[in-house]
Image (cartoon, rainbow, N blue to C red; front, side):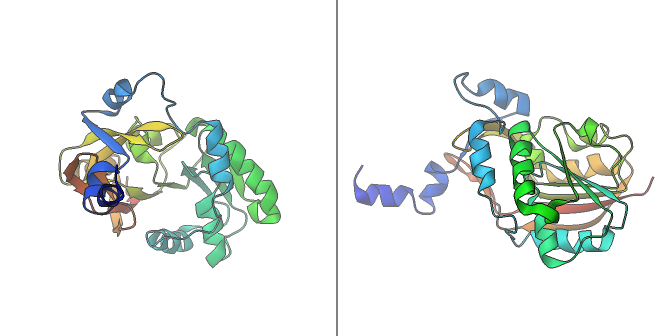
Length: 254
């Protein structure tokens, strides 16, 4: 490949066709998983994950974090437990501490795969007193009572929908904060996300259907916002592009 061709396919708009890490269109998460060749490493529970997350800055802030920071500041009260699904090393927790003191006592439970929680525990030791409110589990069933359920950039990687995940908790949380998920007005689909050191099935949700599924549990939508730093397009299908992910705040009414 000559230098001109290489530059051409790595620059927009052709980079959206040739370089995007999302590959294929499937009717479900399970169908996408079945399409992954058996010699690939599937999911984040890999040794390489530890190296990746151990280097992640604990206070990296993106524009879509600010609505979450605002709502957390207004919602968190002493004695609460927040369950952070897919919370990796506790980035949201450390980011919040960058802007304001968190109430005490507080328990911030990270639920993630084992490779990630092991790394998070190591980072917590490194951070010392700052990490005192963090706890790590590998199953939602082990998280305990939940006042606020939080998840950012995770639900699209999971086969189980949010209502099924919430039912694994002892009771439904009063508040839900969901950030950075891909929702659009098209039909829901699944695809395959090539992360590099691993590969994962990946869901794109229908916006109206996803919100309705949460409301049917007895929640009302309080706030929502775009996440413009997160975008999506399927390789060789530039027509299937999402220019912004989305965030949501729900409050339980029944």
